Image (cartoon, rainbow, N blue to C red; front, side, top):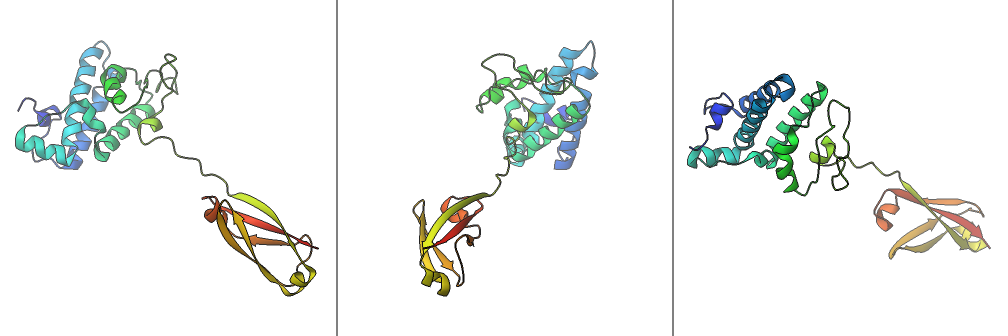
Length: 223
């Protein structure tokens, strides 16, 4: 094999997936450049080595190929599966929780991220408490951008109001009317005894007409 990924993580080929993840997390903390003053360059290279190893051994399919054929990868493999990207995310959040810097990741992971369509900078994320722009061509970056994107804010339910004119007879006896909104037809059942200003609520009807939660309120006008 061109590279011994098990040796890089200090493991035997019989190591379990849990063992592999634990070893990567432990070594990532050990070889963070902030924890190796005066040896930052060596620590960065070691971090790159163990991350590449984890990118292969942490993915069951890639690990099988490696065990059978000696197939090796590169550091970009760490983003290649949910398992390894989650493991990497855990490590990054560990760095963030300990106030460790992220700057050293730019030269290591920049190409891999750009290959996935990101134009990012890790510089400023971590010790300074948040990301910063490095240039006009570099997007503002947070951990959430990398790991599935920021959570979408749930939109508040919308409310749509319509006015419906009915006759006095319909108001007294009740009636069934039809409403068309955005090409969708809805049936409005007007109960008997309504008057001008009465509201008939079509509960959550916006899911049909607008594709989102919300009620349609029918304001009755008797004439």
